Amino acid sequence: MAQTPITTHITNSGKNGRAPGVHHLSISHHSVVDYADPEKYVDSSQDRDPHQLNSHLKLGFEDLIAEPPTTHSFDKVWICSHALFEISKYVIYKFLTVFLAIPLAFIAGILFATLSCLHIWILMPFVKTCLMVLPSVQTIWKSVTDVVIGPLCTSVGRIFSSVSMQLSHD
Picture 1 (cartoon, one colour):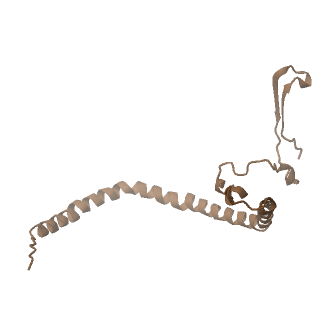
Picture 2 (cartoon, one colour; picture 1 turned 90 degrees about the horizontal axis):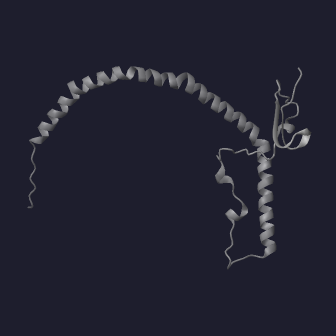
Picture 3 (cartoon, one colour; picture 1 turned 90 degrees about the vertical axis):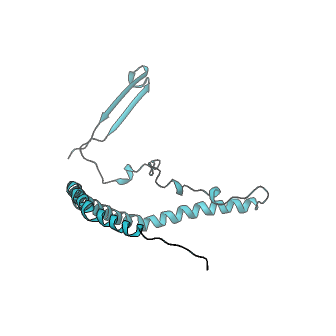
């Protein structure tokens, strides 16, 4: 199947025979994405947390370790500690993601697919059914309350209203 890659060109500087300040935008679309080389689709500068879900994890060495001006370690110790922190955080994270990211993504996909299916096919029909039946239940409950519970509470209230207590200090 023939593929045409997506290309976007914006010219603004007199190139291609256009006057400076004149914008030209050309876009071509493709019909099939080529997944043979996934590395060419990875953008290392891409924001992988656009909704700031894990903004609390953006901690650096200075956020965790801070020496007040009156108490400083040797400069070499500080530099080595900082370097070791950053390197170990980077290497251990990469190591753990190699072994955990794909299985956990698979498990999360199964979990969310299951929850979505249950929500769509069981929970929402049940809720809609309850909301549809609720006016009838509300009418029946009001009748039961007016006929049984109301008079019962009134009678119990009248019984206890005649009770009087006197405290004596003997």
